[in-house]
Image (cartoon, rainbow, N blue to C red; front, top):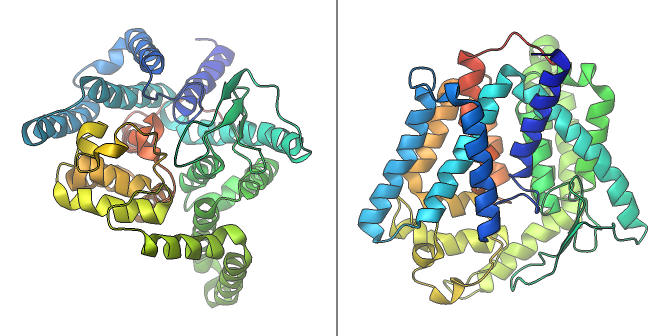
Length: 400
């Protein structure tokens, strides 16, 4: 295969995976068109790469997929209902991630980093345009129809103007999601961020500028976590005790920023106060209220969850079943939907196959989930597969 064509294909595949993981034009929702689009894409890629489905070479994928099929079967038995379309959609998302990950191989992390750089660069122009009081000339416009959150937006594929555009959403449905996908690029390189910065200074600066313009609570917190972890892991062995003042200084900067930013301490304090006054069982889309709401359903079916369909997911709150909720806590939502067994299995795969500070990585991912329902999308659902096929099916072709 021609090298240039291969590079283009790699980035096209990565783009498709990321686009179906949060771009409002592509991302699967409840409408039939988006579901059929995802199913058609997965079918086309599966046929094109039929060799990936060889039982011997793809057995880890089958183990991963079969586990969730068993969870759905158990939900059918104990809940009495499982959405066929929801199940196919869930499994299709994992399959999409698998095919892309197998094709890209050990180039995945660097290709993803480069794609985030391109998205970030474009987003800064879009954000500046919005900041000057202009709307982007959209090819897709979404009106605000949600009761619980503003889901309005204007989209030009590689940039999405969420609401008035005063926060940077990149190509994703809202700024917090963009911040999460940026942080994921750095989490992939935990323990190796120093060389990443040294070899990609301009790209890292652009990406960080994009992250700063999201004004995302979760995004900033995880970025501080990555910074402190990087200082400790990558510099403490070389500089020893001299790193203590630097760690203290960085922590103080993070603390001061946290206390003095409206979207950090003030926002969290406000959410805590508001959540404390809500009636028991009352739903709200912010991360804390959503978590408290989900506790009821986590206790109801802790091991297998309450399913993906609103009929069983909100069985005790039927008035929510027809609403577009904009769930604010992806961690508790996944637990309430798919159960502790799914979370443990997902974590086990990451811890087993990611040998590069896996506990740090998984803590970072779980923190990102506190702010966004990322497990509704192909990239985060298939994260464990990245480490499996990076380890076992390395490609000699190198993007860097």
